[in-house]
Image 1 (tube, rainbow, N blue to C red):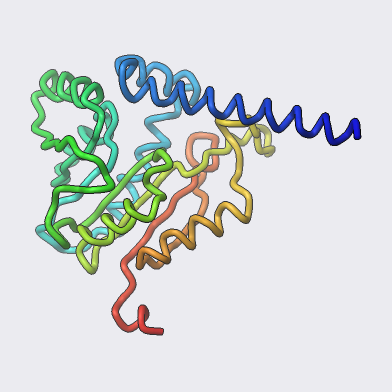
Image 2: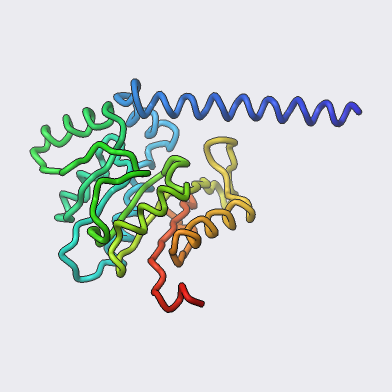
Length: 234
């Protein structure tokens, strides 16, 4: 009986901590957006940019000759969006938070860079079918893995396009050992990775999910491509 009570207490504590973490993240995306960059640098020990830029490397590796632009889903404070523009990538940013738009706009004006941005939700993206050659997102919120969002991604992505997601998990490696910190850093369970794969497969994607060693950490990288009509019939 005592073991059951202890387990119940630990479970309730974990639920409270998770709700508190989600609440804090929500604040950083809205009224505390001006603090987002500082917090991300602190919690990543300065590795945030290096981890995030894995997405640009993946896009370059999977680039196909096309005139279609790329779309960053949930561009946040705009750092990666502007980094892509510096590289000459034809990229558009999508973000729902008006506060994040304000921070990104200030950065773009300061650098005198044109970075087209759209304020909208990823669950109903205001774009035509097949109009993007690539989509990418980094350290995504849970909405990206919802069926509605993935369905929208499949709809607006060209049939030969690619969807790159970086940061589904991050696990720091210290002296050859993985460092697990609840709510922040942990390797995903097999059931969780299976759920990710199933979510993307249900939306019509073929998925490559793997870790990438970057700046002293294992960073989760997911590359999804639309299944061909033939493979969908099987």
